[in-house]
Image (cartoon, rainbow, N blue to C red; front, side):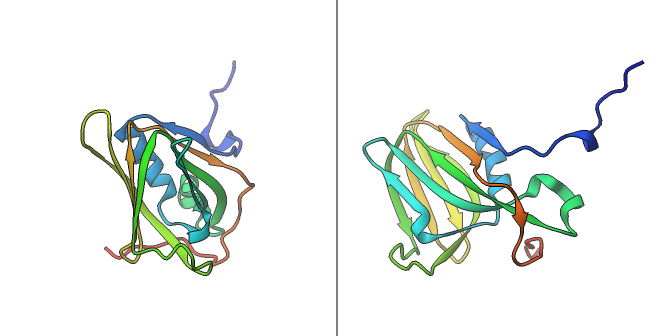
Length: 156
């Protein structure tokens, strides 16, 4: 008799996800909440219509089991079909500025076009005008212990 696979038996693998609609983007948002990145790690390639961030992402997918030794991993969050980028409350020239991503949402304007809004802690924001949602989230390093040693928290 064979035994069913158990969640505990799964191997840790890097994330490599795509988003093509607002529902997919909501999943990506939950996995990138509390990611931190220097302002200098935002790249806008207008010719290719691509905007990307190199994030230090908290590994929320590990759930409560990881609370004793919380981990982060470097990930690339990229958006294609981007026509314009606008920022608010961000000084991109200051190499010491570290930003914290709170959420990624989509506001439809003329289907499938709209705005992807990256809301940052401290009243910062990045707005991407897109032809359609085409996003990817890919882990690019091995996980490492979170330097703070803590799980991010939010007031109720």
